[in-house]
Amino acid sequence: MLKKIIIVAVLVGTCLGVAVLYVARGELSEAEMKSIVIKFLKNTDVSDHLDENSVEIKEAYNHQPGGKVLVVDYTTWSGGHPHFMLEALEGHTAIITLDAGRKVVSAFCVRGDFHGQGIWDLVNRRWVQI
Image 1 (tube, one colour):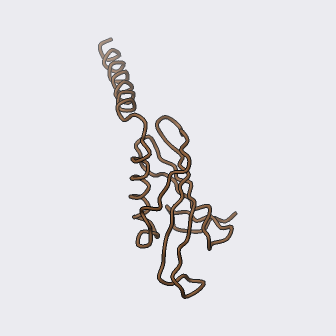
Image 2 (cartoon, rainbow, N blue to C red):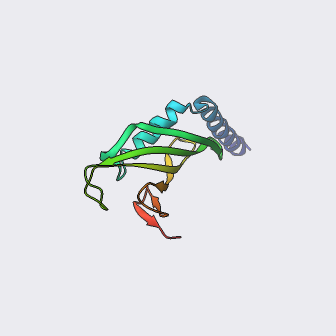
Image 3 (cartoon, rainbow, N blue to C red):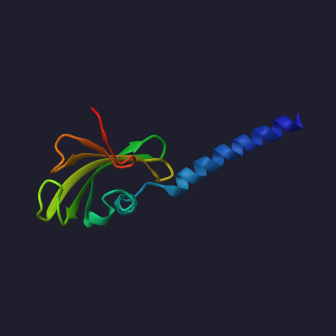
């Protein structure tokens, strides 16, 4: 009987701990979301060419307990674009998913001024075949 009580106490304590953690973290502010996105983008293939001031959270949707789906616009620049030799500024729109721990779990660039209709997987750094 004591073993059952201990197991139940551990399970309830664990569930309450998760609930308290979720409540304590609260809603993400736009500034926090922007900071997470910039930090993420700085660790992708756009890191050297990201204009941090251009990052804008266009939409934010709740996703599962504590997670978010973000629609983000940002601009990159380059000294020589692959399609032409002039400096280029390129606008992008990405869909970025955060889990409850505020970690990026998926990110897809769904629009780039120069990459046509392709979808770029920012996490795995490859084109998505559609």
